View (cartoon, rainbow, N blue to C red):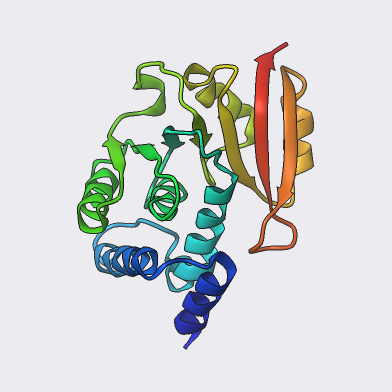
Length: 209
């Protein structure tokens, strides 16, 4: 029942198409199947797929500019938020997402998800630090690291046009303050639709002090 309510809330909040919803259904079933063998998400959050994971990630798609053609998701894990963005944007202006995941089993899961959903993603099974530098239109990361570390990890993949989207929790201001000791930031906090104290950081410029 809870999952049905979560699925209905997901549809209502994002007004997704039937095709998009079908792809998320496929993803959910794959996640449940694979989670019996490998730890893809925290066990206690598996039943909260639609709100805790899918909706929380898919809301980022609306913040990605239509001009963005290539995105990078750092530490993708089970695909949040990179795969969610790729699927959501298939119904409007497509974006190809590169998903970086160093765990081989998780990377294999992501490749199966890409095949089954036909989502425009490329899985890169490498440590973030080992990925060749290249500028992307948008960079995302969810529950990966504090903001100062995210800025460091994402810096080789950003130029003056790159937009960084980082979902954050209640301690977001502390992370911003800590980052400003070493970075000059142009940042905006956008309220999350899934949790009152959660925000999405929209960083348009970040340069080392």
